[in-house]
Image (cartoon, rainbow, N blue to C red):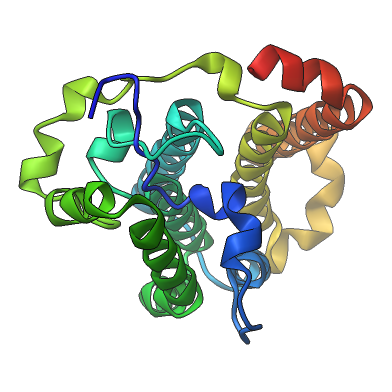
Length: 256
């Protein structure tokens, strides 16, 4: 296998092989799992407290998840080849690992320990059927190449051996493969994180002090900045999406 051949074993191949991977409907899917987690986190942030440790851990997981999201997209060559270099040499499904870390980060930021404990089970319940279907399809299409990589590259969580290749994380990466829709998605994740922190600050006894968001006192600047960051990231997400929809052909040409 030559270096120009990058083997896409990753979860993001669910998009590029979409028609081949159509399956029966499931109660819990990747799409409605994210919606469920966002709803639960927003509600939980009004009921549970936050502290410095959970805030640091939550935003650290969010940053790592968004980083993997972008790198996985930048390495993947859609509808062309199977990818075993770069981040795809560390895990076969880096895009799904990124989703796992992002959703976990929102659970941590929400302050709800029960949601955090339940999330891994919900994740594998919703992603399990897709992972099985993808790998079955890839094995039938790529044969020994895929089987060889499935023995040497972990499916979702990296191990000690695969992490030794972290220096080659960006091998095959191209910024031109990062679409505006992906930029919109990443900024929306940031907006959600700050929105959860804002609700923490406004919950329970602080709801009556909403006016201080616009006229902050010395002790109210946390909520004021969370409000600004939530709005800024959300507006940026809308701008990216609007531009992507208005000029799709221009972006597609620049990404080739």
